Image (cartoon, rainbow, N blue to C red; front, side, top):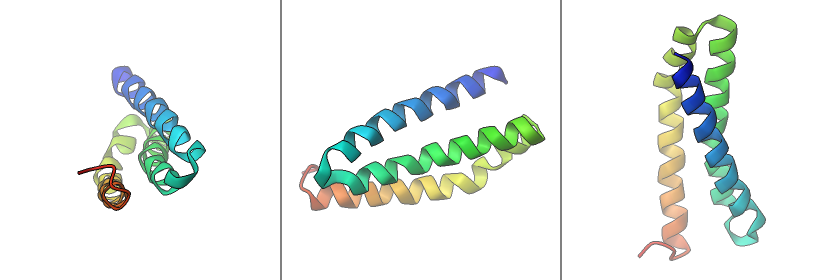
Length: 86
């Protein structure tokens, strides 16, 4: 169970680094904000997991995955719009 927490924290740190890079680069700030959606979701899961138990926190994964998927779809649209993706 601790490995799940370590994985979530490391992924959150990676997404924060990428989001920060996009937020610093002025024309891609929308992508930076959308990259924060998974971070907020995972932090919420960790906080609930610490307070209510890890199983309850992991159960939130069913709900937060929808928000993360929508954020990734919008990231794809923004990248296509900016012609970063071919």
